Length: 542
Image (cartoon, rainbow, N blue to C red; front, top):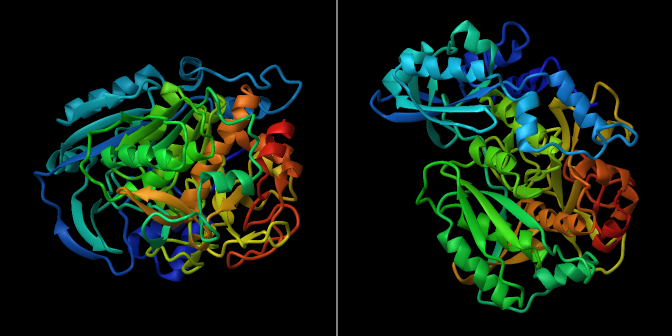
């Protein structure tokens, strides 16, 4: 059974304090989390080299999310275990969103308490999610200061300007007991889009250094009879996607692919930000490029990278059974900011409903991209979240060498993220199938695929051809691969346990390293179970 550790983030926090990344009260607080820990996301965040400019402008409006705790976590963990255990009454019986909410959603009294507290503090409740987990409030920073008993300070660190409270925020005792995390009180953005552009040129014939969707069908042995027909796939996005939709249509025309329209589901206020367009070109073009006959492509979109609302909309709408998310950050920072506590609840609901999130493991190898995104294992050894969640499939990276057979056809990409989590325990589907001890955290990644920019993905960006690599490519590619599997096995549900049960149908990678971890026969912390033989996977998955 998957069980979260009782003492989360202590080892990771200690490592970061020792490395000089977290300093002062925030670092000390991280090391003392087991003792009267504040609600995740309510403590001040201090980073090395931070410049505190004093109290933030009080008139600015800020959005904060109160993530309420799911009920009956022991019962939920037991259900997730039983859904993957043949012979139990719950085996492969997936819940609907309504069933999940009725059984595990926060009590309506918790929502009432959150709304009453917000109203009393002069904050506006802009949204309550249908599964009752997210209460979104807005107010001026003056109102937030009063409501949470803090003074928000303006800080510059790690190339960002953000606000963070000067002390641990407070909540009424009844609401604190029902709250899993507070998101957005600190506005530091820990997540990056882990991708790397190799070249930019005019449209060219796909070759060794630039593979297109038909090339990948050959490389990964995709069956002509199973192409994702009738399936809906989703991607998690941010910003203005109008150009992304145009690029997707151009990509499909250039590659003689069926035209799958992009349907954007706005989950927050709309944004004019196009800085992530390259990323979402990649996500949309290869989620569908690996499954050309899917019927629908959904983009669950927000105005902020890493926002929880698109994740939650994917599970509450339950229109697609598979989605990719190509972003991540050092898991200790995500833990301190409340993302781990809040997002894991969303991922649990997805798993209970038979849905799968494919998450890029990062492009720092065995290191953590706290301050840089260098495409190499540089920084503090650690894994990235949300890939390190026990309720998602973490996707790492390989390099295609130009050879046609293993073991030299595909090797570990140096930048592919991997290692042990210091926050999440190994879930049962991993620990039961591998030689994990109870003292070792969840292993990352689970699977891999080509991610090296030197053997990159040909992507249409702003109408022109570009070659992009990174685990931001391998994650949506697996999203498309899983659509093919779902066509053949529509009731198989959450992908990870099935992949571990069917490890022999994957392509084991035995050469290369991502820094601390080398590829070895069987599971390893550089490429996980390996890459795909799609035909064999479709035939043998169970």
